[in-house]
Length: 409
Image (cartoon, rainbow, N blue to C red):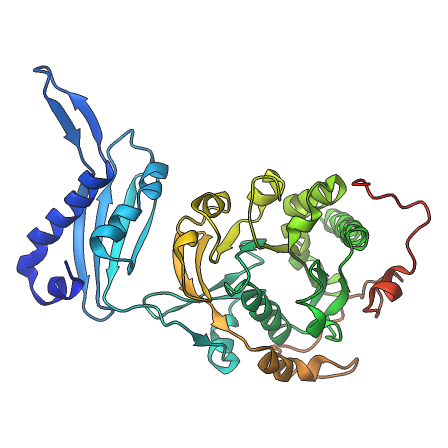
Protein backbone atom coordinates (compact mmCIF):
# COMPACT_ATOMS: atom_id res chain seq x y z
CA UNK A 1 0.00 0.00 0.00
CA UNK A 2 1.69 3.15 -1.22
CA UNK A 3 1.68 6.39 0.72
CA UNK A 4 0.94 8.41 -2.44
CA UNK A 5 -2.51 6.85 -2.46
CA UNK A 6 -3.16 8.17 1.03
CA UNK A 7 -2.00 11.61 0.00
CA UNK A 8 -4.15 11.78 -3.13
CA UNK A 9 -7.36 10.18 -1.96
CA UNK A 10 -8.94 10.60 1.48
CA UNK A 11 -11.22 7.62 0.83
CA UNK A 12 -8.23 5.37 1.40
CA UNK A 13 -8.14 6.23 5.12
CA UNK A 14 -10.24 3.14 5.77
CA UNK A 15 -7.64 1.09 3.90
CA UNK A 16 -4.91 2.76 5.91
CA UNK A 17 -6.61 1.78 9.17
CA UNK A 18 -6.94 -1.80 8.00
CA UNK A 19 -3.28 -1.92 6.97
CA UNK A 20 -2.13 -0.85 10.43
CA UNK A 21 -4.43 -3.35 12.13
CA UNK A 22 -3.02 -6.03 9.86
CA UNK A 23 0.47 -5.08 11.07
CA UNK A 24 -0.67 -5.30 14.70
CA UNK A 25 -2.14 -8.74 14.08
CA UNK A 26 0.86 -10.11 12.14
CA UNK A 27 3.32 -8.83 14.75
CA UNK A 28 1.38 -10.05 17.79
CA UNK A 29 1.01 -6.45 18.97
CA UNK A 30 -2.04 -6.95 21.17
CA UNK A 31 -3.16 -8.29 24.55
CA UNK A 32 -5.08 -11.56 24.50
CA UNK A 33 -7.59 -12.87 27.02
CA UNK A 34 -10.68 -15.10 27.21
CA UNK A 35 -14.13 -13.74 27.96
CA UNK A 36 -16.68 -15.42 30.21
CA UNK A 37 -17.78 -17.64 27.35
CA UNK A 38 -14.27 -18.90 26.76
CA UNK A 39 -13.84 -16.97 23.50
CA UNK A 40 -10.36 -15.60 22.78
CA UNK A 41 -10.43 -11.80 22.67
CA UNK A 42 -7.65 -9.60 21.28
CA UNK A 43 -7.18 -6.05 22.54
CA UNK A 44 -5.30 -4.12 19.83
CA UNK A 45 -3.66 -0.68 20.14
CA UNK A 46 -6.10 2.19 19.73
CA UNK A 47 -5.60 4.23 16.55
CA UNK A 48 -5.95 7.79 17.87
CA UNK A 49 -5.30 9.74 14.67
CA UNK A 50 -4.29 9.44 11.02
CA UNK A 51 -2.99 12.54 9.28
CA UNK A 52 -1.44 13.53 5.96
CA UNK A 53 1.10 16.25 5.27
CA UNK A 54 1.19 17.26 1.62
CA UNK A 55 4.22 19.51 2.08
CA UNK A 56 6.50 16.81 3.48
CA UNK A 57 4.63 14.03 1.64
CA UNK A 58 4.11 11.96 4.75
CA UNK A 59 1.30 9.97 6.31
CA UNK A 60 1.32 9.58 10.10
CA UNK A 61 -0.50 7.18 12.40
CA UNK A 62 -0.88 7.97 16.10
CA UNK A 63 -1.78 5.00 18.28
CA UNK A 64 -1.78 4.08 21.97
CA UNK A 65 -0.77 0.69 23.31
CA UNK A 66 -3.20 -1.30 25.45
CA UNK A 67 -2.40 -1.16 29.15
CA UNK A 68 0.07 -3.85 30.06
CA UNK A 69 1.70 -4.21 26.64
CA UNK A 70 5.48 -3.78 26.84
CA UNK A 71 6.72 -0.87 24.65
CA UNK A 72 10.01 -2.76 24.29
CA UNK A 73 8.14 -5.58 22.58
CA UNK A 74 6.69 -3.08 20.12
CA UNK A 75 10.19 -1.91 19.18
CA UNK A 76 11.44 -5.49 18.84
CA UNK A 77 8.58 -6.24 16.45
CA UNK A 78 8.94 -3.06 14.42
CA UNK A 79 10.09 -5.24 11.52
CA UNK A 80 6.42 -6.01 10.81
CA UNK A 81 5.79 -2.35 9.91
CA UNK A 82 8.66 -2.49 7.42
CA UNK A 83 7.24 -5.68 5.94
CA UNK A 84 3.84 -4.09 5.35
CA UNK A 85 4.67 -0.43 4.67
CA UNK A 86 8.24 -0.67 3.33
CA UNK A 87 11.52 0.51 4.82
CA UNK A 88 10.84 4.23 4.43
CA UNK A 89 9.13 4.62 7.82
CA UNK A 90 9.83 5.99 11.29
CA UNK A 91 8.46 4.72 14.60
CA UNK A 92 8.68 7.05 17.60
CA UNK A 93 7.23 7.13 21.08
CA UNK A 94 7.64 6.16 24.70
CA UNK A 95 5.61 4.02 27.12
CA UNK A 96 2.11 4.28 25.64
CA UNK A 97 1.59 6.71 22.72
CA UNK A 98 3.53 6.11 19.48
CA UNK A 99 3.64 7.63 16.00
CA UNK A 100 4.34 5.70 12.83
CA UNK A 101 5.26 7.97 9.91
CA UNK A 102 5.33 6.75 6.30
CA UNK A 103 7.55 8.78 3.96
CA UNK A 104 7.04 9.19 0.23
CA UNK A 105 10.55 10.70 -0.03
CA UNK A 106 13.72 8.87 0.96
CA UNK A 107 16.74 10.17 2.82
CA UNK A 108 19.51 11.22 0.43
CA UNK A 109 22.37 8.74 0.25
CA UNK A 110 24.93 11.48 0.81
CA UNK A 111 24.85 14.98 2.30
CA UNK A 112 27.91 17.17 1.92
CA UNK A 113 29.15 18.99 5.01
CA UNK A 114 28.73 22.71 4.26
CA UNK A 115 29.69 24.93 7.17
CA UNK A 116 28.20 28.03 5.53
CA UNK A 117 24.81 26.30 5.62
CA UNK A 118 24.86 25.01 9.20
CA UNK A 119 26.78 27.83 10.90
CA UNK A 120 23.82 30.13 11.62
CA UNK A 121 21.56 27.39 12.94
CA UNK A 122 24.26 26.29 15.40
CA UNK A 123 24.79 29.74 16.95
CA UNK A 124 21.97 29.14 19.44
CA UNK A 125 23.98 26.40 21.18
CA UNK A 126 26.83 26.76 23.65
CA UNK A 127 28.50 23.59 22.38
CA UNK A 128 26.76 22.63 19.12
CA UNK A 129 26.55 19.06 17.82
CA UNK A 130 25.54 18.70 14.17
CA UNK A 131 23.89 15.30 13.71
CA UNK A 132 22.47 15.12 10.19
CA UNK A 133 19.27 15.42 8.18
CA UNK A 134 16.03 13.57 8.87
CA UNK A 135 13.45 12.30 6.39
CA UNK A 136 11.71 15.67 6.44
CA UNK A 137 14.89 17.28 5.10
CA UNK A 138 15.47 19.10 8.40
CA UNK A 139 18.90 19.46 10.01
CA UNK A 140 19.01 17.88 13.47
CA UNK A 141 21.37 19.51 15.96
CA UNK A 142 21.52 20.05 19.70
CA UNK A 143 23.60 21.48 22.55
CA UNK A 144 26.08 19.09 24.17
CA UNK A 145 26.16 21.42 27.19
CA UNK A 146 22.46 20.64 27.76
CA UNK A 147 22.52 16.94 26.85
CA UNK A 148 25.99 15.69 27.76
CA UNK A 149 28.06 12.80 26.45
CA UNK A 150 27.80 10.81 23.20
CA UNK A 151 28.32 7.17 22.21
CA UNK A 152 28.89 6.33 18.53
CA UNK A 153 28.99 2.77 17.23
CA UNK A 154 29.38 1.29 13.77
CA UNK A 155 31.43 -1.13 11.73
CA UNK A 156 34.33 -0.08 9.53
CA UNK A 157 33.02 1.84 6.53
CA UNK A 158 29.66 2.68 8.12
CA UNK A 159 30.41 6.42 8.39
CA UNK A 160 31.10 6.57 12.14
CA UNK A 161 34.60 8.03 11.79
CA UNK A 162 33.41 10.71 9.37
CA UNK A 163 30.68 11.69 11.83
CA UNK A 164 33.26 11.98 14.59
CA UNK A 165 35.36 14.18 12.30
CA UNK A 166 32.44 16.50 11.55
CA UNK A 167 31.47 16.80 15.24
CA UNK A 168 35.01 17.71 16.35
CA UNK A 169 35.59 20.03 13.38
CA UNK A 170 32.34 21.85 14.09
CA UNK A 171 33.36 22.35 17.71
CA UNK A 172 36.61 23.98 16.63
CA UNK A 173 34.95 26.13 13.97
CA UNK A 174 32.32 27.43 16.39
CA UNK A 175 34.46 27.96 19.50
CA UNK A 176 37.80 29.67 20.09
CA UNK A 177 40.74 27.84 21.74
CA UNK A 178 40.05 29.85 24.91
CA UNK A 179 36.46 28.60 24.96
CA UNK A 180 37.12 24.93 24.24
CA UNK A 181 39.86 22.40 24.99
CA UNK A 182 39.98 18.97 23.34
CA UNK A 183 41.63 15.85 24.77
CA UNK A 184 41.74 13.08 22.16
CA UNK A 185 42.48 9.38 22.60
CA UNK A 186 43.09 7.61 19.29
CA UNK A 187 43.26 3.91 20.21
CA UNK A 188 43.53 2.83 16.56
CA UNK A 189 46.14 5.51 15.78
CA UNK A 190 44.21 6.33 12.62
CA UNK A 191 41.60 9.05 13.20
CA UNK A 192 42.92 12.08 15.07
CA UNK A 193 46.30 12.72 13.44
CA UNK A 194 44.80 15.60 11.46
CA UNK A 195 43.89 17.45 14.68
CA UNK A 196 47.30 17.28 16.41
CA UNK A 197 48.31 20.83 15.53
CA UNK A 198 44.93 22.46 16.15
CA UNK A 199 45.06 25.18 18.78
CA UNK A 200 42.09 23.68 20.65
CA UNK A 201 43.73 20.26 21.01
CA UNK A 202 45.72 19.77 24.20
CA UNK A 203 46.82 16.21 23.45
CA UNK A 204 46.41 13.21 21.17
CA UNK A 205 47.28 9.88 22.84
CA UNK A 206 46.91 6.24 21.85
CA UNK A 207 48.43 3.90 24.48
CA UNK A 208 46.32 2.60 27.37
CA UNK A 209 48.59 4.00 30.06
CA UNK A 210 48.62 7.42 28.40
CA UNK A 211 44.82 7.45 28.07
CA UNK A 212 44.47 6.67 31.76
CA UNK A 213 46.91 9.46 32.65
CA UNK A 214 44.92 11.83 30.42
CA UNK A 215 41.69 10.88 32.19
CA UNK A 216 43.35 11.33 35.57
CA UNK A 217 44.44 14.80 34.54
CA UNK A 218 40.93 15.74 33.41
CA UNK A 219 39.49 14.33 36.64
CA UNK A 220 41.88 16.54 38.61
CA UNK A 221 40.74 19.54 36.56
CA UNK A 222 37.11 18.61 37.17
CA UNK A 223 37.66 18.60 40.92
CA UNK A 224 39.37 21.99 40.70
CA UNK A 225 36.33 23.36 38.90
CA UNK A 226 34.05 21.80 41.49
CA UNK A 227 35.94 23.67 44.19
CA UNK A 228 35.46 26.90 42.21
CA UNK A 229 31.70 26.49 41.85
CA UNK A 230 31.43 25.65 45.55
CA UNK A 231 33.48 28.69 46.50
CA UNK A 232 31.24 31.05 44.51
CA UNK A 233 28.02 29.25 45.41
CA UNK A 234 26.92 28.40 41.85
CA UNK A 235 25.82 25.11 40.27
CA UNK A 236 27.53 25.45 36.88
CA UNK A 237 30.83 26.86 35.62
CA UNK A 238 28.94 29.14 33.21
CA UNK A 239 27.69 31.06 36.26
CA UNK A 240 31.17 31.83 37.59
CA UNK A 241 32.35 35.47 37.62
CA UNK A 242 33.89 36.57 34.27
CA UNK A 243 37.40 36.62 35.71
CA UNK A 244 37.05 32.93 36.58
CA UNK A 245 35.43 31.82 33.33
CA UNK A 246 36.47 28.29 32.32
CA UNK A 247 36.74 26.73 28.85
CA UNK A 248 34.61 23.72 27.99
CA UNK A 249 36.51 20.45 27.85
CA UNK A 250 35.62 17.58 25.51
CA UNK A 251 37.30 14.22 26.00
CA UNK A 252 36.97 12.03 22.91
CA UNK A 253 38.01 8.35 22.92
CA UNK A 254 37.93 6.49 19.62
CA UNK A 255 37.53 2.70 19.87
CA UNK A 256 36.86 2.71 23.58
CA UNK A 257 36.54 -1.10 23.53
CA UNK A 258 40.34 -1.26 23.63
CA UNK A 259 40.08 -0.12 27.26
CA UNK A 260 38.05 -3.24 28.10
CA UNK A 261 38.86 -4.49 31.58
CA UNK A 262 40.69 -1.33 32.64
CA UNK A 263 38.93 -0.70 35.95
CA UNK A 264 40.82 2.53 36.56
CA UNK A 265 39.66 3.93 33.22
CA UNK A 266 36.08 2.82 33.90
CA UNK A 267 36.01 4.60 37.25
CA UNK A 268 37.48 7.76 35.76
CA UNK A 269 34.87 7.78 32.98
CA UNK A 270 32.10 7.21 35.53
CA UNK A 271 33.27 10.31 37.38
CA UNK A 272 33.17 12.33 34.15
CA UNK A 273 29.68 11.03 33.46
CA UNK A 274 28.36 11.90 36.91
CA UNK A 275 30.01 15.28 37.46
CA UNK A 276 31.11 16.47 34.03
CA UNK A 277 28.09 18.46 32.94
CA UNK A 278 28.08 21.05 35.74
CA UNK A 279 31.85 21.44 35.34
CA UNK A 280 31.73 21.90 31.57
CA UNK A 281 33.47 18.57 30.81
CA UNK A 282 31.99 16.13 28.28
CA UNK A 283 32.82 12.65 27.03
CA UNK A 284 32.46 11.32 23.48
CA UNK A 285 33.22 7.64 22.91
CA UNK A 286 33.11 5.45 19.82
CA UNK A 287 33.51 1.77 19.09
CA UNK A 288 33.07 -0.63 16.19
CA UNK A 289 31.34 -3.61 17.77
CA UNK A 290 29.22 -2.94 20.86
CA UNK A 291 29.17 -6.03 23.06
CA UNK A 292 27.98 -6.41 26.63
CA UNK A 293 31.52 -6.67 28.00
CA UNK A 294 33.26 -3.93 25.98
CA UNK A 295 31.95 -0.98 27.97
CA UNK A 296 30.90 -0.68 31.60
CA UNK A 297 27.09 -0.55 31.79
CA UNK A 298 27.15 2.53 34.03
CA UNK A 299 29.40 4.40 31.59
CA UNK A 300 27.19 3.29 28.70
CA UNK A 301 24.07 4.61 30.43
CA UNK A 302 25.75 7.97 31.09
CA UNK A 303 26.43 8.49 27.39
CA UNK A 304 22.92 9.83 26.94
CA UNK A 305 22.97 10.43 23.17
CA UNK A 306 23.65 7.32 21.12
CA UNK A 307 24.36 7.17 17.39
CA UNK A 308 24.15 3.70 15.90
CA UNK A 309 25.57 3.30 12.41
CA UNK A 310 25.49 -0.15 10.78
CA UNK A 311 26.36 -2.85 13.31
CA UNK A 312 26.66 -6.59 12.85
CA UNK A 313 23.55 -7.84 14.66
CA UNK A 314 20.27 -6.86 16.28
CA UNK A 315 21.83 -7.72 19.64
CA UNK A 316 24.58 -5.15 19.12
CA UNK A 317 22.01 -2.56 18.03
CA UNK A 318 19.99 -3.20 21.19
CA UNK A 319 23.05 -2.89 23.43
CA UNK A 320 23.48 0.72 22.32
CA UNK A 321 19.68 1.24 22.31
CA UNK A 322 19.49 2.03 18.58
CA UNK A 323 17.08 -0.64 17.40
CA UNK A 324 17.32 -1.15 13.66
CA UNK A 325 20.96 -0.11 13.25
CA UNK A 326 21.76 -3.63 12.06
CA UNK A 327 19.39 -3.11 9.10
CA UNK A 328 21.10 0.04 7.78
CA UNK A 329 22.86 -0.37 4.44
CA UNK A 330 23.69 3.20 3.38
CA UNK A 331 27.04 4.63 4.43
CA UNK A 332 26.55 7.56 6.78
CA UNK A 333 23.04 6.43 7.79
CA UNK A 334 22.45 6.01 11.51
CA UNK A 335 19.80 5.66 14.20
CA UNK A 336 20.03 8.28 16.93
CA UNK A 337 18.60 7.82 20.39
CA UNK A 338 18.25 11.23 21.98
CA UNK A 339 15.76 13.27 23.92
CA UNK A 340 13.07 12.62 21.29
CA UNK A 341 13.50 8.87 21.10
CA UNK A 342 14.77 7.08 17.98
CA UNK A 343 15.35 8.97 14.73
CA UNK A 344 16.92 7.81 11.47
CA UNK A 345 19.34 10.36 10.05
CA UNK A 346 21.87 10.81 7.27
CA UNK A 347 25.15 12.20 8.63
CA UNK A 348 26.92 15.00 6.74
CA UNK A 349 29.98 13.79 4.85
CA UNK A 350 33.09 15.80 5.67
CA UNK A 351 36.01 14.85 3.45
CA UNK A 352 39.39 14.93 5.21
CA UNK A 353 40.79 17.40 2.67
CA UNK A 354 37.82 19.73 3.17
CA UNK A 355 38.28 19.48 6.94
CA UNK A 356 41.97 20.38 6.54
CA UNK A 357 41.03 23.50 4.57
CA UNK A 358 38.37 24.58 7.07
CA UNK A 359 40.67 24.08 10.05
CA UNK A 360 43.83 25.52 8.47
CA UNK A 361 43.36 28.97 10.14
CA UNK A 362 43.56 27.38 13.60
CA UNK A 363 46.66 25.28 12.99
CA UNK A 364 49.10 27.91 14.25
CA UNK A 365 49.77 29.08 17.82
CA UNK A 366 48.64 32.65 17.10
CA UNK A 367 45.55 33.10 15.00
CA UNK A 368 42.15 34.73 14.77
CA UNK A 369 39.40 32.18 14.27
CA UNK A 370 37.27 33.56 11.40
CA UNK A 371 34.37 31.27 12.30
CA UNK A 372 34.05 32.10 15.99
CA UNK A 373 31.00 33.97 17.22
CA UNK A 374 32.87 35.96 19.84
CA UNK A 375 36.33 37.16 20.81
CA UNK A 376 38.58 34.86 22.87
CA UNK A 377 37.87 35.01 26.57
CA UNK A 378 40.33 35.49 29.40
CA UNK A 379 39.87 31.88 30.52
CA UNK A 380 42.90 30.53 32.38
CA UNK A 381 44.90 27.92 30.50
CA UNK A 382 45.57 24.54 32.04
CA UNK A 383 49.18 24.80 33.15
CA UNK A 384 50.07 21.22 34.04
CA UNK A 385 53.33 20.57 32.22
CA UNK A 386 52.26 17.18 30.91
CA UNK A 387 49.77 18.88 28.60
CA UNK A 388 50.85 22.47 28.07
CA UNK A 389 51.32 23.15 24.34
CA UNK A 390 52.56 19.62 23.65
CA UNK A 391 51.07 17.26 21.11
CA UNK A 392 52.99 13.99 20.95
CA UNK A 393 52.94 11.08 23.38
CA UNK A 394 56.62 11.39 24.21
CA UNK A 395 56.37 15.14 24.82
CA UNK A 396 53.25 14.82 26.95
CA UNK A 397 54.21 11.92 29.14
CA UNK A 398 57.91 11.29 28.55
CA UNK A 399 59.05 7.70 29.06
CA UNK A 400 56.86 5.21 30.86
CA UNK A 401 57.20 5.26 34.64
CA UNK A 402 59.45 2.49 35.87
CA UNK A 403 56.83 1.45 38.42
CA UNK A 404 54.00 1.44 35.89
CA UNK A 405 52.21 -1.91 35.74
CA UNK A 406 49.37 -2.68 33.35
CA UNK A 407 46.55 -4.42 35.21
CA UNK A 408 46.14 -6.74 32.24
CA UNK A 409 49.65 -8.12 32.61
